[in-house]
Structure formats: structure tokens, C-alpha cells
Image (cartoon, rainbow, N blue to C red):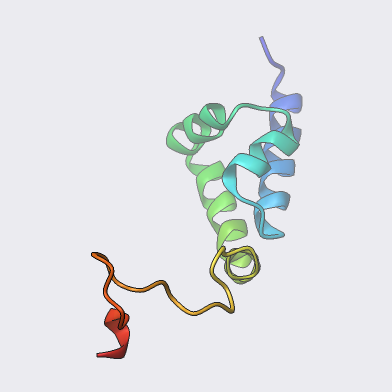
Length: 92
């Protein structure tokens, strides 16, 4: 069984990673736990939920920026509509 101090340390690492804009999966991985464990802790421990939510909110802008930078169609024209139309749907 895990000691309380190890769990507290893992929770602090997960909160810190969430505050820097990491995803929940990346935060759990950095803390050395499974993603399902993180979600279980969020469901069972209200104090951890409040602290993690504060970190998650603080990292929201960074996560959105990373999603925009890594988007597959960033800077490209949207693809044409379905069924081989010559004019894209957004241009009508």
C-alpha cells in the first residue's frame, strides 16, 4: 500500500504539471501514476479536486495555445466540402 506522503507528493506533482498547461494524462504520467488513478483521486478526494481544478484553470491558456500550434490544419485553407464539390462550403 502507498504511504500518505508518497501520495501527497504525487498529487503535488500532478497539480504542478496541470498548472503548466499539461494534459491530465501527461500530469499523471509525470507523477508516476496511471490516468485512471488520477481520475479516481479527483472523484474521491475533494481537497485534491479543488487544488487540481485551480491548477487546471491556471494552465488553460497554455493548453489552448499548444492545441492551436499543433493543429493539423493550422495556416491551411479548409478542405472542400464532401462529394467533390469544386467550391468549398464556407465560400458559398
